[in-house]
Every structure is written in C-alpha cells, then in structure tokens.
Length: 604
Image 1 (cartoon, rainbow, N blue to C red):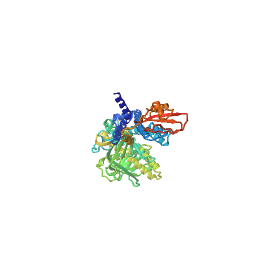
Image 2 (image 1 turned 90 degrees about the horizontal axis):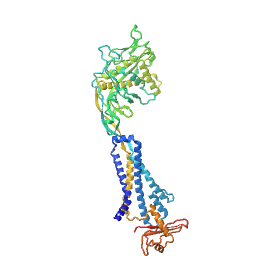
Image 3 (image 1 turned 90 degrees about the vertical axis):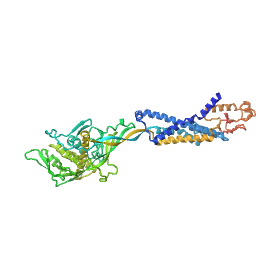
Image 4 (image 1 turned 45 degrees about the vertical axis):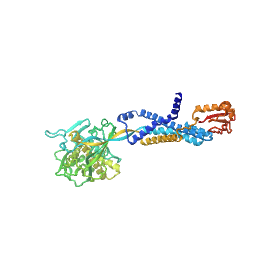
C-alpha cells in the first residue's frame, strides 16, 4: 500500500506541470473562438467592467502572470528532462555544459556558461514576460461595435392642413387664425417659423460662412442640445424628440452610440446676382405718412406687384426682401436696400428646392448630426426622388418667411438681417481672400439664405411632428458600444505559443516514451547536488575501486550503475569504474588543495 502511494506521488510529481497546461490550452482556444465569432460581454458585465476598470485590469494582470508561469514551468520541466537525458547519453561533458543546462531549466542568466547557453537561457527567461503580455492583450476587454435596428418617427408632409403663411402680428383681429403652437420640454414648436425663431435664424444667417473655411457647425433649434456638423438639409427634426426608443433600456446587447437612417427632404440651393434692371425698389409709401416706406415691384415669379411697408427715419437704413406669393419654382427673393447697405441693393436670388434623399447620422455620444447624400446619389439628377410636397406649398410658405423676417428686423437705425448677411459676406471674403466686393457679397448672401432655409425646413418638420402629429415610422440602423474579450491578434499569438509548447511536449513524450530512461540524478535539484557532494567528500581519499568497496559505496564484485566522479584540483579526473553506465570527466582549473568527489547514481 505504501509502495503504491509512493509510485502515485512519483507519477504525479513527474506529470503535474504538464497537466496544468490544460488550463491555458482551454482558455486560449476559447479566446480565439470568441474573437473569430465576435462574442461580446453581456450588458451587465460590460457595465461592471466599465465601472471597475482598474480592478478588472489588475485581475487580468494576475491571471496573465499565472498563465505565463504555467508556460514557463512546462518549458523548464521539458528542458530539465531533456537535459538529464542528453547528459546521460554522452560519454563525457564539461561543467560548463552542466551549468548551461541548469540555467535553461531553472531559468536564470549565468554569464559564466558558454554563450550559446546564455542565449538559450535568456530566451527561456523571457518566455514568461512575452507570454504574460500576450495573455493580457488576449483577455483585456476592448471596445467594439455591434449593430441592431430600431425605429423612430420622422415628419410626414402628406398632411399640410396646418401649413400656411400666418400673420406676424402678436395679437390678431378676431376671426383670424393664429399659428398652432406647442411648448414642451424640448422647446417651442410653431408653424409661425419666421417670427418665433427669428433670433436663431439671424444667428444662423450670420454664421453661415466660416472664416477659416472649415465645416460649419450649427445648433439644432430646440432644447435637445444637438449640433449639426455641416448642412442639415432640413432633416433631423426627430432627433432628440422622437427617438427615445433608441436607448440602453431597449438594447440589452450594448449601449447605443450612433444611429443612421435615410430621410427625404430638399437639397436647397441659391444663386444670387446683381440685377440692375430689377423692378423691386424702396419708395415713399405716402407723403403724409412719415417714416413709412414701401418696398414694391415685381420679381421674375410674381403674378402681381409685391408690396410691403417698412419703418424708418429714412430709407437709408432699410433692407427689404420681396418674395412672390405664387407657388412657382424656382422661387425668387429680391433685395432692395437703402444707402447704408448699398452693396445689398438690387440683389436677386433664385432658390431651388430639389427633392433628395439624405443619410442622417446621429451621434448620441457627441450629440452631433451629420447629413450627407447616399452613395450613388451625390450628383444632381442621377436619381429621381419622390417630392415630399408636390404642391409646392412648403417651399412657398418657407420662402415667404424671408419677407416677414426682413420687415420685422428693420428699425429706425439699422437692419439686423442686413448685418447678418454682411457678416456672412465678410467671412467668405476672409476665407477665400477675395477682394471683389460683388463676389464675396453675393456668395455670403447665398450661404445665409441656404442656412436659414435649411433651418426653417427642419423647424416646419418639427412642427409637423409635435404640433400636427403628422409622422411616419422610420427604421434606423443602430450602432452599439459593446465590450469583447481582447484583440484577436493577441488571442491568436497566445494560442500559437501555447500550441507550440504542447506540441513540443507531446513530441518529446512520444520520442522518450514518457522519459522512461530518465536517470535519477537531477542537476536542478539542490538537495540532490548536496547529497552527491557529501558522498563525494566521503570518497575524497582516493578514486580506486578498492577504496569504494572498502567504504561501502559499492560491494565487492558488484556491477553497478552507480557513477563516481572525482574532482581533484585542475587535473583530469574520471570515474574509476569500468562497468559504469556513464563516464563524466570534469576539466577544472582551481586550487589543488580543494578536492571534491561527486557520486552520481544512474538508472539501472
């Protein structure tokens, strides 16, 4: 029973290190499969990892070090077994070779051994560092993306029953219809766009052109705190308002970061010229009406004379905009200006509303909205897109807002709208380095009209959503922020290193038949070295067989596999046994007064 227990202990001591490789083998395969199949952590696990980054990383470092330790122990045991068999098969070897094998199997760096062993020992010693780094890279959770679908509600212009030009007066006479409005947590929503949002629209006109030529950024005109990067094209009204289903509660797989959808709107363009023959002028309304001046005349799309009244000390500070009431396309805007704003006088702009589809990309993380044409539709006229309003009512009502804005923003001393248009013109001049006043003025006005038209179109869309409740569902593609276990390159490298170690061990086990011929001496075992040195000291009086027999190291006439090595100063010392299985010769230069006899027992 005791002998059986001893055999079991010896067997376990021989193989336990290699059995430990089952852990990194299973883990490396799991990590590689997870990378290939793009497994991700569940949302609760991801939240825990994000909340406890430092603790999770510390745990990963510890586990990685333990896995690297298993690799290092397995390689060292493999080298130790191989070294013992290799030295046992040689007729003789030097102490440098013995120490070299010991440094590889320990592992440690000993510069007193031959350079080849130093290099090999360095590689073995660095294995744990490299392996640990690979495990860290393979296990550290990294941010990744997953995709899902969701639904939002976008404006519908199929019902335009509330879309009309509402008077700008604060208090309407009895019987006149006021503009429908609604005030919510997201802000004020109204069909009287030109008046209710006049401050935001003027700010948009003034900032329509960037001084450095960079992409323009403009705030969405509500309380959602979203920002358009580039033009809005009248899209994105639903963002932050009718997209509440795009939230973490509805996506258990991860945290929504962006979503994208396609919305049909108008690609609004403007082309401005100086029309010296324009009929739209500022005149005295009535000689008896002081400070009242009329902006009147025909535009290219007028069916009758356009007329509106402006207030001022004189016509010098007045800037009027004329817009035809007819729903013809393209739409025209005429500008008549007094002496203070003479560079704006006689400007005539055609504004075109071209139906187009747009990719709307919403970043929930940065709270930005980016709008672009879908691939393949970047050119005008390439794809026929259904008009959101074939009647032209939306375009007509929108353009008419320019006349209301110009009228309301002219006071006794200045025109706020004109100042905004000139600010855009000066920005265009600075960005392009233009010195042609006509050129930079026209381009600045074009940019301002487009920016204001885009904003007003989006505001009408928001009114359709909130006030009119005219909406349609839209499927969106949602990008989710998820965590996945490590980087696939590191998982592959860790698997490759682990596989190389396992293959080397299996090959060696097959070659040596499980190390059956393993000698009992172990140069990595300090206890064995001390015992061998002690026995050698007992035999230091001589190295002949008779002495060994007398001391009882071997019996008389015994044919033993016991090996005796005498170390005597710098002389050539060899074992005195003729029947030994192994002969070890040690060439050593040293003090003649120190003699050591080493007894090594070989396998029977």
